[in-house]
Image 1 (tube, rainbow, N blue to C red):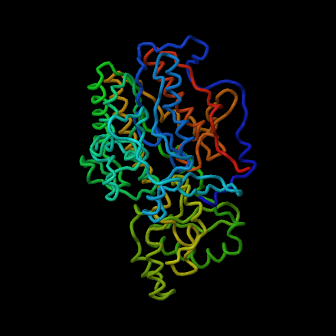
Image 2 (image 1 turned 135 degrees about the horizontal axis):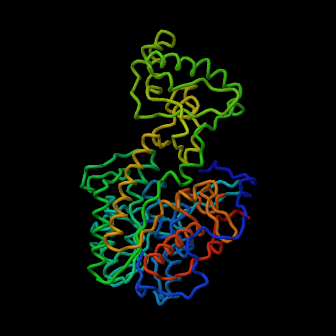
Image 3 (image 1 turned 30 degrees about the horizontal axis):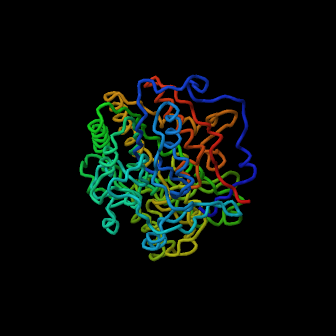
Length: 512
């Protein structure tokens, strides 16, 4: 993400607007009460969104602004948890030095910060993995970054010995009570009187952020066979969530809670920041005519002969142009292209063209170019022959760089199935249903969400709610989430918890 530059104009888009709030039922001027809920023991269960993860890492200041910790402070005003413990990281950078090195310096880096040129840049990790859990050591915040639904009930997910085989999560290793426990077991052991549960995001997110580099496991009920980027079967997700609810009910029959549904991944800036058509005539310059004459034109002609002429159009000299992408859902026309181009290009070159462009097409507004792909467009593929080696221009962006229309539809189908089950379970067990999906879609609209005179949106950085990784909120974004939970809790349990002051929390830190 190093080449993502934020203009001064865009930064000014954090617009002050009229004083009001988009949260229903303002209770800030009424007596605080718990209603028919009991907030004396509050535990929050989930993934990175529950933990306070942001800027590509889990770090101290981010955890202090996790949405559960914000809610706990409001609950404390109504007789709730007076001490909300979190598995705090030992520094304000995040990452794990030993795991960073073990991953070949590709994972577990420290938080992203804005460089002097306003480009998000990862930091070196702050310390080695530290163990702060153990027998009898429980935490109110049970958010585990990276956890999918079934990980909540998987024994050994907190075992340090399992890290080497990828069957454990270092964040849970840090605070698990034992090597054999589960997230649910440790949460239930605290017998919470009230809980929040937000899980299922990662059951589709890693598929989406990897550009669909996974398998839709619908129909496969054995998550132990899933790959890290696969989409979980909806019945697996629903059964896990049901078992978590029953497990907590078994630990405390009077427990109540709030459960959140899953936002559409395409409402977050990781998928909406980079346009599908960034290739301006000015950017292409004199190469535009050359590309049309030597590449786009011949490809268009050949593909048209095979009934696939719509895949490629000539570059425009008057308007922006879409990037070239590889779409694995297309019929592979490698052999046909090779045969058609051999007379003019020779067998060797025609074969290379066939392999490169057999499933190539230009992107459309229905495709999602990943945030990280901004650094790839215009760079060269060292394994491809020049001049057809410039990503997005003369060489297709690879599957991992783009969430195509087809892949996005697969994700949406899974999320809709998850959310239907979550809604049904909320009704069955009397839980407050937090419509996080609706709130995130509202945030992603042009009008965004207003809070006390400030307009917030889902625009990358300039919208004021997302951190530098484009996936996780910043402090103000998490405050909006906290208020969404509080609204649902108040509406369901007749409590009057006050909303948190969104504007009082941190946004993106710009370099001095």
